Length: 227
Image 1 (cartoon, helix red, strand yellow):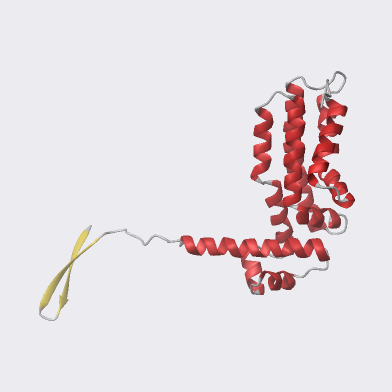
Image 2 (cartoon, rainbow, N blue to C red; image 1 turned 120 degrees about the vertical axis):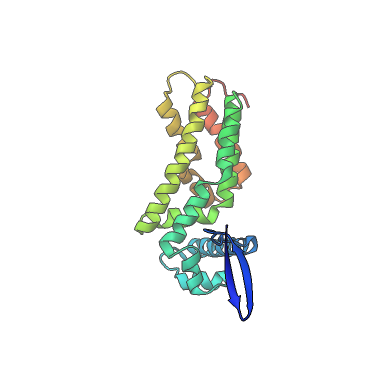
């Protein structure tokens, strides 16, 4: 803190000020909320268009128009098309329900319950991210950006499935002769993205699919398969 004197006409004015004080940056909660809502509208528009028209045939301008924002807003809020598809992939791969499924599996020692939790929760996620799944799987063999986003999402998803598969092994629910690596592969076979893509193409209900996958995985893995 310091004092200084300012001479204003015939008057002397003493002013006290704080040395080294800088103005703090202020972020408005309302502004941050509005920015997130804009970002969400952009991603939702991109999901719908990429799934319906295909990644390659969708322009950033079309995404902006569908989201009701200016073209430049898409670039400043999310980015160009590679950033859009990656943001979609990250959103799906990092959904909180994945962590909850892992925790739920860790809380039970019942092998069939572990399979049921996996089937039910992954079916809900695949329903919620159906457009993202369609966009990633349909274009990953034709576009390097989509392939990179798809690889990220699938790698993260498989890591979580591996954790749940390991739990099945650790509670001794797996029949003899099936090692940990094979259990992980069987989990990916039944609950991986390609399985859910096939179910999408068959137009099964998610509830029907979850029940069927639970039964099939139980037959393949468990020491007992009582339903």
